[in-house]
Length: 233
Image 1 (cartoon, rainbow, N blue to C red):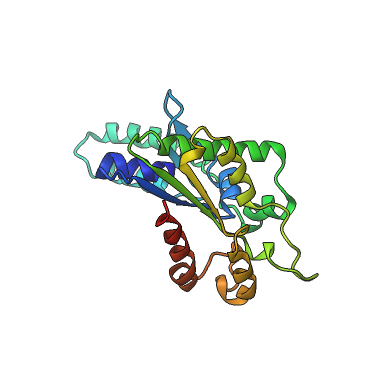
Image 2: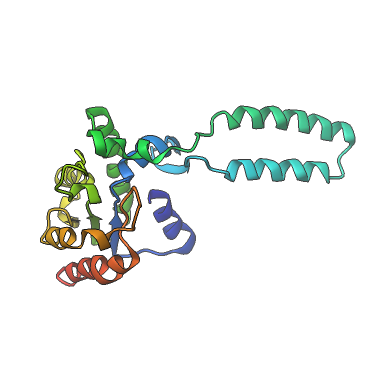
């Protein structure tokens, strides 16, 4: 989200006065396991990242190799380039993270978040918040979180998760220097919790291990509730 915001501002000159950030339960695992390879500038600002199983580098390397073969360079130059490129590709590919299984991404929720993992997540959220408020015209940052299905179950078959992203987000917001301009809409702690429990079988995408809400729930329940809060600002 940090990079997306930077692109919107720098490349498209989009500078909203209110930003709504939706943080998903699986974002804890994503930050811990999927987005480990990151590049920052000298001031600590995030400038790029390599998500799990990304093919962008591989595609770029293949295109570079093809361009070399069809170029008008001397054969010996092409050969030297190919040898160097082959070594570089082999070396970099070892650094590309393998696809992370869903069970690993969900593990912080299932087992609970330890201190080091929580601090890592806090750092990422704080960095995003700092980026958001680099625009002095920004009035409010609205952060919305909703529970995973297994935060709401109450039977012996489906064991409840131990960790919940809204709790972590709230800790960050309460300590932030921008807390007066941040609104955390926590669907797990709000009156909407009962609504979710009542509609447990239809609120979430069926058989989705990450419990994303259905499109209907987003359009008829989630977004309208968020926008109703914005009207009161």
